Length: 126
Image: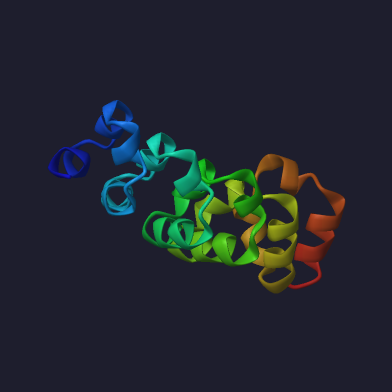
């Protein structure tokens, strides 16, 4: 645990069992969002774990399972922690968020800022 707290990249050299340990991974993610990149795939796909991780480091959203990058609660939790995390969200979650907070479009990915429906949704709010 101490090594993961000091250097998130140490997690990549840990055993698979340790990379599946929620407490260890969450501790490392608290230090640096990139630690989630080295977590076991099943943790990156576990919605409850992901909510905790992105609540501590919003930019960890880039390393979660693709379907969770479209989960509105996951995206909103990540966005609340770090607005720049929106660039990693899937289209439907971005659209839902900008319909409520048009100003959030500035944090979306380039592709989302070029999407007519997303832009239309954002501009109808502000």
